[in-house]
Image 1 (spheres, rainbow, N blue to C red):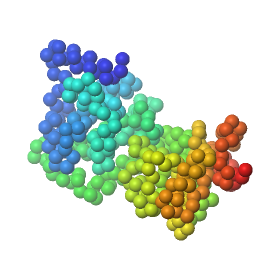
Image 2 (cartoon, helix red, strand yellow):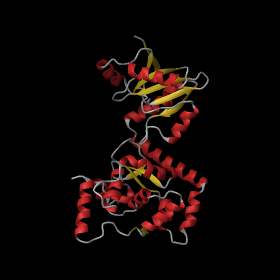
Image 3 (cartoon, rainbow, N blue to C red):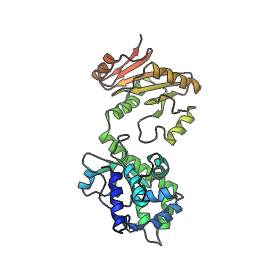
Image 4 (cartoon, rainbow, N blue to C red):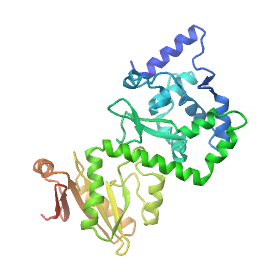
Length: 332
């Protein structure tokens, strides 16, 4: 039985017994207080109110292994958990809040640091950040300083909210959260994430002097974040959903020339199709041209892929992390 089915059954049992499905407050915080605080920080709508209220829920976690450690829903809840709490328990419907709306009812909060991204690790603990893209273990919780505003006495919370909204305080808060998330990422970095990082931290400085990174496709959520869109726009670039998304995109601002790196741990080499697509992208954006490199972690991985597919496009490059001094030119 799915979590949604479990919660529908739980709600129906409570309704049949004449019991309240969702309490009037969690941890001493009512939905009215949530509504007032969100209005104060200019983030108030029905979805956002219900989402924040769900993240106050102090019942046992809906992650089985986290519940065994007596962790709570408020310690870390996935998008599905939050959507189910809102749609099925709070609103009494038979469908959870639409996941596709996440950018409207979660993203605004993590962009200001009111909600933190967390990850359920192998020790059944929630660590900062989303180190593994699109993982079922990616979750969210209220940031402690924002939770403190919600719990503060009536005569104090507005003062705390005003301090919290100060731009300098916001920058410090986001910087701290980013630092904590990076610590988690360093511990649970996937092979693909590691190769992407090595491609732009090791390969690019050695072989692509004069090129700056303008886009890295190794995140969670949006393929292109708002910050990345601004960076791309400053470089005179626009990536659309129809473009072949590169793992790393670099620009030489003096020559107006692009370079694409594809980091391969399972598939995704620079083949003829990807090369043609990104050449069209470069031309459409008024660039002087584009170069290409496919990277692998090991010779063994490269040999396994190329003995089977032989799909590296002509006039591209090959770099292997365990043999980092060589930048091999592919000629057919």
